[in-house]
Image (cartoon, rainbow, N blue to C red; front, side):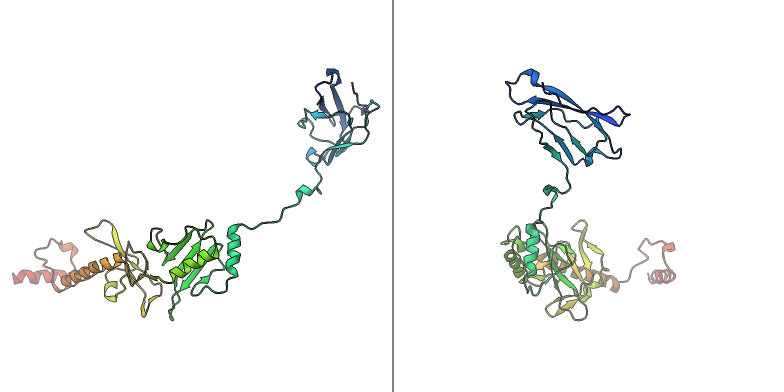
Length: 327
């Protein structure tokens, strides 16, 4: 049996701790008597030292035997000296050169950080920055995503015509007047599902240049029918069917408009002047205006109406009295 020649430290208070290692020979032919339990007494020289800061734990073992560490539990050892060295064993064949079991050196090469490798999206962003001209589009350098902007060519006021964004999943998105173009729009037909290269993005921008923004119904005669931001309903359809858009300094050819009435089904992106839903709703606007004008030209018959006198002002009451005298 191998027994370590250890110098036992004097008994002290709780600063003296024990650590046990179970050494089992790898060779199955070894006799059971070759297995030994070594008890190591460690004197705590620095009470403030913690095991996590241990730099080296060194053991001297025989080169003729390979040992497997079965019990390596530090739960009973809360404080330990930074260096523990077990001297040579009583056996004459013991190698006195220490063997390094573990090391927590701060200078270890494992702690060196690996160089940062940019992902595919960041590489695409750098490739786009090398392109000199995207006219009439502008590459938004302040955006974290890939984004292109085109402005209206209005002289009085600068407005955004549309924005094209390529997200981190390489999906394309077009925003017109704060509304996203539907993924089911015919514009996306023939374009790749993901825009992963500069060539794909240039193809998208080139196709978008051949389209224009639907002007809706910007006629001034219809703008008085409803305030900005208010929706219009219809007896034939439930809910809001149209709304009046605010000022985007929009321009279409020679036409400049500060407001327009759009159908809620407006496709925004068109090859002509306006989309089909806005064209169909144009007829509704015409009929609505005719009804309003007819009401204005035909006085209300207060004699036959059920208006309460408490809800009428002085002029309305006088008008009702005149209508009663005319009967």
